[in-house]
Image 1 (cartoon, rainbow over the protein chains, first blue to last red):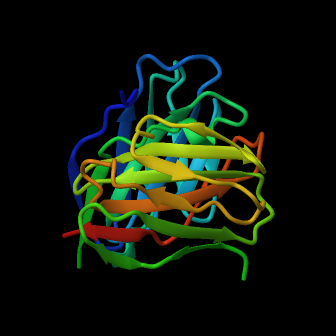
Image 2 (tube, rainbow over the protein chains, first blue to last red):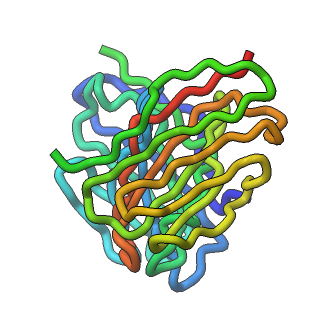
Length: 112
Length: 113
């Protein structure tokens, strides 16, 4: 069973920031938080991952709550190409990628 | 360019026929994975392999078989024992022991008529 809870869908306007929430109240101390996104008829694409501290990369930022029971993926300026299904996933540390459980994710729509 | 190549992209087969999906990677990754995705659903793990000549069952291995004779290749056979094989199949790879990125192929869409 998926260990994270995400909204089924969200909408955003182009060039505005998007905050995608994820709840993971049963997260363990060794669980990493991973985000992937999937465009229609394509394989998922890695976005970002983190353990405790907030993380930034060229695609997005990951804000992790102090108690680690929730996190938020931040897209700073949404573009039409960001329309995708976003998956928030927990992985229990080293070598766990194959055990990542992809739930239904959040379908993000971006309006021009 | 480095990456994962899945073939064919689309495949149609008659019921009762075995089908083999190809997955090749040139990323020098030790670990490789097969996932199945049904419409509107998440991904479910079929098989994974962390080293040549060794592989483990995932959550839905029944009706599927794999081999790992070479580091670069991890083919998946959908056998006639798989009751509902029509789905989108995704292959992935990663650095063994890493906490980071899982690299996916473009997927193979299998339709059983």
